[in-house]
Each structure stands twice: as C-alpha cells, then as structure tokens.
Length: 508
Image 1 (cartoon, rainbow, N blue to C red):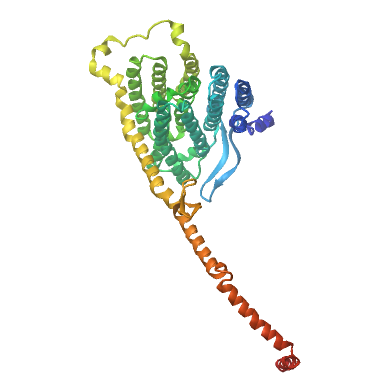
Image 2 (tube, rainbow, N blue to C red):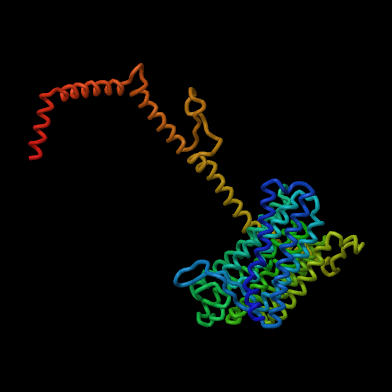
C-alpha cells in the first residue's frame, strides 16, 4: 500500500492538468468552428465536468491512502531551471493543509461546473466561459498543491487572468470591461509583492520550495521580515483586505457561477491559504502578525458597516465574505491557524451555496431587504461613509487605474505617431510615385527599400535598357572583339610555337 501511495501521489499533477486539457480541446473546437449552436454545448460542458470530476476522484484517492498511511508530503517530480545558487523544480506539497483545501476546491469546482451548464445555456459566450473556468480550476490547484512558491505563482497568475476574463465576460458593456480592468490593476500590486518575496527567497534561502521555509531561522530577522511582507502584500490583495478591498465589489460583474467560485468560496481564500503555508516564517516576526490582526480588524469593521447599507443580494453577500475572511486574518495573526483553516472550509461551503442561490434569493424570501439599523440611519456622516464605501473605489481609481490608463494612452500615442510611422503598418502604405500607383510603401524601412529599388532600376535603365543597346552592351561587344583578335593571333603557328617555348623556359 505504501508503494501504491507513492505512485499515486506522483500523479497529482493530473489534478491541475486535466482542466487544462479540457480547455485545449474546447478551444480547438471553437477555433475550428465546431462549437456553434445549442448542439455543441453538451460536449463542452461534459468535457469540463469530466475534467473536474477526474481531479476530484484523484484527490479523494490520495486522501484515502493518506488517512491510512500518512500524507505523502513534499513530492519533487523534476527539474525546471536554476543555477548554482538556487533551483526551481516541478514539485507538489501533499501535506494535510494542501490535501484538505485541494479536495474541497475540486469538489466545489465540479459542482459549479455542473451548475453552470444549465445556468449559461444559450449564452453567447457559453464556450468562452468554460474555457476561462477550466483555466481557473487549473490555476487554483497549482496554488494549493504546488510544492514551491514559483509554481504557486504561476497558478496565482492563471487565477488572475481567468478572473479578468470572467469579470469582463460581457465584453460589449463598458461597465464590465472597466470593472475587469479595475480588478486586474489592483491585484497587480499584490503580484509585485509575491515576486519580491520569491526573489528574496531565492537569494537568502537558496530556492522557492516551501520546505526551505523551515530554514528561516538561518537568516536575520530583518531579512525574514522583508520576505514575509512581500507574501503578506500578495495575500492582502488577493483576499481583498484593506487597502485593496475595493476591487472585489466590482468583480461581481461576471456571471453568478464565476462570482460564486471566485469571490465566494475559493479564490478569495487564496491569501488565507498563503499565510497558513507561511506559518514557519510568520512566527519569526511577531510584529508582522500584529499587523495582520490590525488589517483584519479594520477590514472587518469596514465590511460590517458597508454591508449594513447594501440593497442587493450579491453586494450584501460579498461584504459578508470580506468580513469572514478578515476574521481569518485576525485568527492567523493571533496564531490560531487551525481555527482559521476550519473557518475557511466551513465558510467556503456555506458561501458557495449562497452565491449559487443568489439569483433566486428574493423569490425565495419574498421580503424586501431590511433597512439599516436606526443608529446608523440617524448618523448622517457615518451613513454617508458606509454608502460611499469609505471612498476606497475613488481612491483606487485615482491612484492605480487612472495612472495605468494614462500610461496605456501614452504608449498607444507613441505607437501610432512614431513607431507605426517609423516601421510602417500593414495596409496603410501610400504610392511613392503617381505614375506607379501599385508601388505602395509605408514607414522608414519601406521608403529605404523603395529608394534602393529606384536606384537599381535607374542603373539598369542607364546601362542595359537605354535605346536599343545600352552602354554596358557596347562595352561587352568591344571586349568581345578584342578577345576574338587575341584568339585569332594565338591560332597562328608562329605565336603558338612562341607560347610553347615560353612555357619550357618557365618550367626549366
């Protein structure tokens, strides 16, 4: 049985790869024009569902063997890249933390996939939704099961890309694309912290493996603090904690199933998982743990006040999510990591049900949303602050999104007014001469080639094509006459004998 567990654990890479295979097959069908009409929907949904169920079945098999013989732990499957000082590898971590969350995520992913098949029936972007959903399921499993920070970061970015695609699912609506950009830009600040931490880990710990964190005592407290702060920034951004909370309310623009799995049950807890994984580092820096308590407490107060004034189901739910995740941050900061893990699992299961039920919530309850409490309605300043969500949206828009948009506009202007004019743009050429309208050029390289072509044509015309015979032709005829004269002289006997005698003289 131990051998079976070892072999089965080495196949854990199939858990994230199976959804990717479904994505590839569905994408190929779309590109080849095979995914058109209602008849094409069942195959797409069936592929996504089978991939999700296959990952769940494999996780359950590993769980069963782990219960009987112990968790496999760190599994290194191969070398990726590196140098003499550090190495990146394909490795997976199958300890109790990863097995619990990986199995829970696989179950939720399978349920959401099955739910989405009926919910998105006859939607214009049906196949596009399942492509993005499969990409997310692969990415989140890389985050949860990766044995090193670098592979986890790959999954982290896959989740971010799929989130961007699904928030902007209704791409023809400016609100959807604007919210997708807002969420994407805000989360890039967290990604910068993740990258900083990975670079410091490679320099100070010699690699990205989670097992290397057990050697955290070998580095100084200052270095340890810098390393942890990078990961904490990434966790705060991904889990929508202050000061990065504003993006998650805009992320609800996507379809309900994606809101459920992304921001209700799974991805919003990725930051909590990262901090649970970093527990050996966190205990070395108590001041950072105090900072987690403060950030979690402030976020909980913010989410509680904002949630009291919401009038739609999904907004009220999302502030409830932020509040509960903030309590998990407080628990981790206090060192109650087991409580945070149990809280995470219970909250994910509860919220996925609530979000999937959100479109029918009003018809089920048959009641109007409750009014904010009297003490809040009577305090106009606090009520206004809660309704405006502490103006975090405007602040993030001003500090993050607008500078990014300005930079993009400047880059586009540079491309249109300088780069395109310098190197040319296909289909935008102009005729160089009126008498030759078919010769069209654009950009500096095109003009240089056209000038070279004109010069060569001028040379050709002057030497060969001018009149009945050009100068080059006359020179060739004259050279041919001289050669024929020399040939005639050499054919005479006296000159031939002189050539033979000169040859003997040279030889002797």
